[in-house]
Amino acid sequence: MPTYIVSAEASLLSQENKRSIAAAITEEHNHVTGANLFFAQVIFHDIASGNHFMGGRELRHDQIFFHGHVRSGRTREQKADLLKRIVARICAVVDVPAVSVWGYISELPPSHMIEYGEVLPEPGQEAEWMASLDPHVREFMENVEK
Image 1 (cartoon, rainbow, N blue to C red):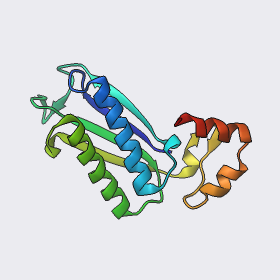
Image 2: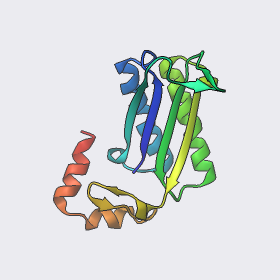
Image 3: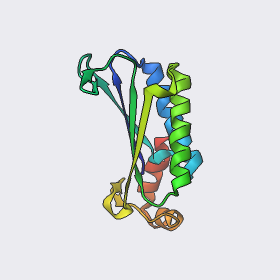
Image 4: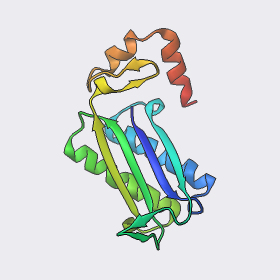
């Protein structure tokens, strides 16, 4: 259900950093929202040097940006908690200060999202939705995180 896109200068994040950040985002999303781990996806965009600008000038410091596209229905407090947790985890992995990590969450109505070939349920209807899925789809989903 959530898709997080993480962007940083190509030389900033090692492959191990990316693995650790992907795990951290997935874990924090699960912790705050209760969404199953197999729904979270994290996509990294490596930005070539000279292609990131702030204030109209070429970036002069380390910067990590993440944008989470999530299903609507979470409280304001949940979203703020999720953002703070993700920033803290990224800072711990990459050893950058919080001022170097920017994050946004954009909400989408469940009816505007399709994953694993199925339109997503409203919050609170996940169990019924999962039970209604073809057993092969459920098995595929559950094996993603293994």
